[in-house]
Length: 332
Length: 133
Image 1: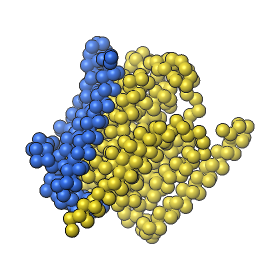
Image 2 (image 1 turned 30 degrees about the vertical axis):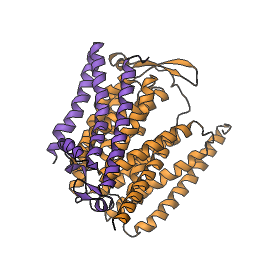
Image 3 (image 1 turned 180 degrees about the vertical axis):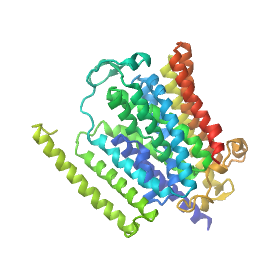
Image 4 (image 1 turned 60 degrees about the horizontal axis):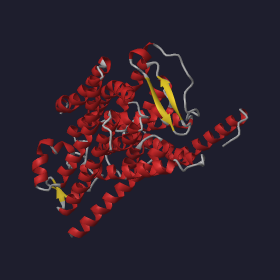
């Protein structure tokens, strides 16, 4: 019955697009990017092998990066010069990362990547909670790298309604962090925007707007490096990659529209819970298929991950509300 | 009128790259459904996504050198292949344009750095990809 096959295939294609929309939406609302959500969703709920999920994710990462960077570059918020300079490290890291993934896949240790992915996902939630309150970083003295690598720029801040001049420092530290960001990107098939933001925001003291938009611009170049290695290794399944790319772009587009309208900060906790759950479930699944922790079946792992995530979330909410009370802040 | 500043060119490349890619991906997906499969794989096999990776249609059997003949045969997988390679070359062209801009401005340090980035991109594509096979 060819019609039945056609319908099942079409339904599957649409269901992957839906996963892509969800990942793109959540990825842009949390600032973590589509891939960080997409890979767990595809592997945990669709049963797609890790390498195909990572391949599809990497492709959608380039597409969303290019799509959103197009606007930021035109408005001159993203600093192309600083971005390209840091790409020296990210592209090198991406090469090492994707070779590592290819090696892990050849020797049949793919379960370790699940565990690493879960750990990276949980780790990248830390900067998400402690999202810096200030728009423009405290002024710091330029160092020798500021002059040598011409780490300065100006952008127009729409909310502050003025041109902001900025300088960057500690270029070398930025490069080191960028190498790891590239490595993680190549190993896991994600953009690793969270690490790139740490590199520019924390290490180089660049303004948050410049950091996030430049990171967005850089993600595409990093992912393009790994993609060709992924391609020849056979990590990209066209049917999955096509559906996710379309879905993630749609999701990211609407995510950007919704983001400006969200005023209720508590909604962030819902996103946070989903990401916690995905991270924990990835670790558990990795330990399960690696024959390390097999007492609990995959079915029950789902509920255990839900439980741990909920417990952790309430703990964090409690911690943060008591901390802000201590400082005597009025909660917004 | 559009001013051909460096930023505008980069922005335009990114936008055109994404639009081309998405169009080719959609056309390719449509052909996979219309032709009931692609690159010798039946549709029922292609959409069996949770199975083994080695006997599944994947990028290692889609050589970029076969794109032209694949598209001539209206093979959906090769439309997607072309779209994805255009997507990979989109950021690469941005780096190339940046290199040209740094050469124009005679910015020696950044000429070197953008050349390294370009080298890495092509090194991954032409050398490593073949070596790890």
